[in-house]
Amino acid sequence: MPTEEEVAEMFDALVSNGLEFVEASIEELLANRQTFSVAHFATGVELLLKARLFKEHWTLVAADPHGCAWTGLKDGTVSTTAASDLCDALTRVTGTPLADEKVTFKGIFDHRNRALHFIPSPDRAGVAAEQCRAWYSLHNLLTHARRWGQHFEPYADRVRAIDARMLEYRPYLQARFEAQSTRLAGLDKAGRVFECPACHFRSAVLPDKARMISAFECPVCNAEDYVALVSCGARIPLDEIPLDCSCGGEHDREELLEALDPTPSLGPKDSLTYEADRGYCGECLDHEISVAPQAGGYVCVNCGVEFEAAAISRCDWCNETWANYDTEFSYYTGCEWCDGHSPRD
Ligand SMILES: [Zn+2]
Ligand SMILES: [Zn+2]
Ligand SMILES: [Zn+2]
Ligand SMILES: [Zn+2]
Image 1 (cartoon, protein in one colour):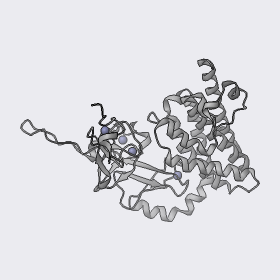
Image 2: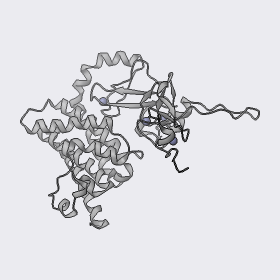
Image 3: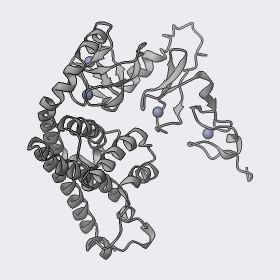
């Protein structure tokens, strides 16, 4: 068994290596060496995802955690989890689904495989867009308190530096932006465009009837995410909330829940029968109440997923409200937060 110190040392090596590969891939793209950039970027992502698994427990990076010996890990003879399985493994150990990230990172890993088999990489703009989008997802995971921020805090400066360097991809993305500019200008007039948090062009497009919490997609870097329209009028990605905003105020989830499901102000004579129309989310399984009504349905202020009213149900045992969660036998089986009726009771 390794000592705590040895485990900390290896975690540091995994993260440092991962960041170094990402840093190298940026240099390579800027130097017009696409194939290396594609391969090294994917390796960087893979190492950083593995580092998060390792943080949970060092055996988890092995393809077979039960047969994993520390010595094998140290001298590199253990076969580790395949890149394509990392997001599923992370979902299992962290309890938070990585559904969208899985699609994004799969693109990165597939591209590495193609690049290493002499299939030419797409143009520099294509690679820049792909990395911009994937770095946005990875950066969210590595920095936000609600995700993995606490584990990667010691590397915050280096992560910030990479984030800043990503801006050097902008000239390659300029042509993609210009190709869309007429359409974007029209959408902008209709109030449907804001600055993309991934590539920073004014190119993030909201759906036709944008709600307070809405999905967006960016045709320049292909990023997709969910944003909230907060009280000062800014659109903020959900992962970034709570946020000390440039408006001087702080925006948090309570503000969003309160805007979606206002609590009536109760006068002294009013009865206290008001019940909040809020619940837990069966999609992200966040530990706090995060679902509230929006536009005739419901929405989660944590993951952004929208639900129809029919997706709401209650646990028959603890009576908690759920969105998109199977409560059919919950009297006996309970829900995420209770064990249900045990026969011994
Ligand atoms: Zn973008
Ligand atoms: Zn603000
Ligand atoms: Zn959710
Ligand atoms: Zn329950």
